[in-house]
Amino acid sequence: MPEPGYVAVVVGLSAAVTWTLRAAPFAVLAPVHDSAVVATLRRHVPLGVLCILAAHTLRDVPTGSVVAAPPFVVAVAVTVGLHLWRGHVLLSIAVGTAVHVTLATLLAGA
Image 1 (cartoon, rainbow, N blue to C red):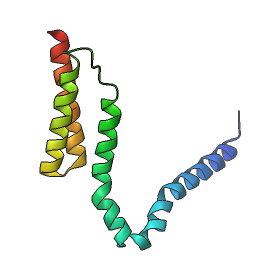
Image 2 (image 1 turned 180 degrees about the vertical axis):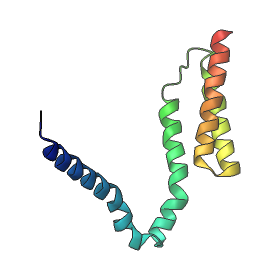
Image 3 (image 1 turned 90 degrees about the vertical axis):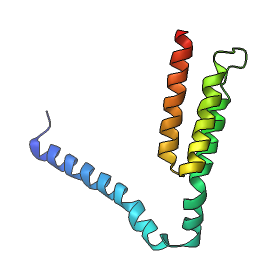
Image 4 (image 1 turned 120 degrees about the horizontal axis):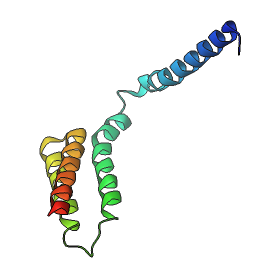
């Protein structure tokens, strides 16, 4: 069993390293926060993330089953429509996921 002093030093060092690693991105990115590059990324990355998630999801759509494909198609349409209407990424993803799970559950039970 290690000595209490040793454990305290290890815990303190671990906490210091963790805090530093979590604070470093904010300290490094603070000077570029108002740059044109960050503004462009802020504007375009959410839609890019949605496109990547949609492509990743749709590559596994079972095309041989009439029952399995509609939840995917409807969920993607709801996600895209909601994102274009509201522009909120988390809302779009959450609602699209909920629509897919609900339709897949309902159609699987039918």
